[in-house]
Length: 503
Image (cartoon, rainbow, N blue to C red; front, side, top):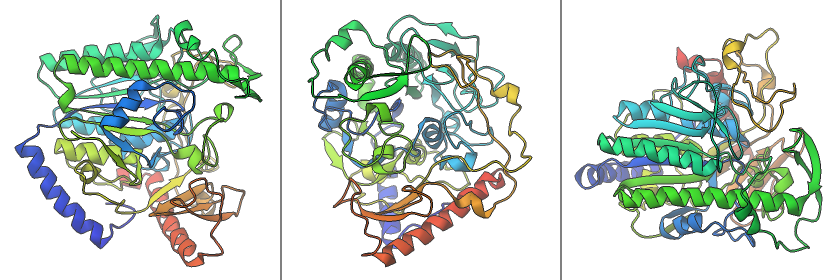
């Protein structure tokens, strides 16, 4: 049950690949352990392997050099909560009403954690959740949505973070935050290994989201950024007040780069321990960012836009997969891939049937096997909250949506926690189709309302990845076809939003 039909040629390729993959998987390779890793606000250009002139990311660089480097990988949303919803459900975030940061999932959604737990995996979540409150009473905490155990934060976190373990009261952990969550994950993995259980672990880092904090040794790596680099003033959160301040961008980037390097080091600690315990060969590590570079950090982004937009700068992110048992030699792929692909891919690898409801992702098993050369159907994006119906009721009791874990950045009401929301959406209205949206099919990307209400743009991403040349007048038939496909897909998404998939 999908929003876009598969092309006939793609159906034949995928059918052959599925038969081949299943036979290879069952005959030669046991089901893999899985670790999903996600940086918070980590943009496409902010890795050494993508050519950043200053950043030091030796571990991600090695993963890209030895594994499967996804050069055209996208976040399913243009900001954090939406993208995390796409990872968990394999569906566009509007289907579950997770419109923007601070909008929760719905308890009726079927998650990849639930599916893999049903397949016999031990499941755990560590770090940023941001899909609802992590407390025990929440019906959308990690445990309610499929994780056996969790050490999680409602939102982002810095040095010496506070986490809730299995829904309990927040407890402060001293140290570098990325290293803390990796150490906790390794303890869980060791326990799963003792029990001879395959494991599914999600580690969602708090880095490099602002406000920035880093250890002195990591900051020292970036003491000598060029004087010509980052010379403008930018706005971000003050660690001292929790409210907005203005600072020199070079100083801000020094702290941001130090956070990224610390996160990279923690990933290295994970890989090293997996190797020492004999688990690395058959463990699939999948790293990505959750959206493009935020405004205050834009300095070397080669694309148009930034976090919060559906131009490439807002949704194209680093993506790399490492699985030595199945990817013994390095490969680079320019196939269009996205976070919604994680659920169908992992379900196929685990031999678990897909949920019987509309999904927006596709299985990348053929890509892992080296037989997928193009995405079998279009990929669509849609950003921004849909207006609440007059009198619409909250989807969940607001008390259950209140967060508990503190963070440095104060909310609009002055509190140091984050609360969540989600609303009933009973019917589809014409205005519900509005908002920034885009669709990619092959080399072409059609974009609506991103340059202002009523705007229409068409780009050839292969020739023009920076989206500078609008081809709408030169290729009107392509634009019209893509706009029709986008509208039909939106209809499917809105139908899901009404709750139709849960009945």
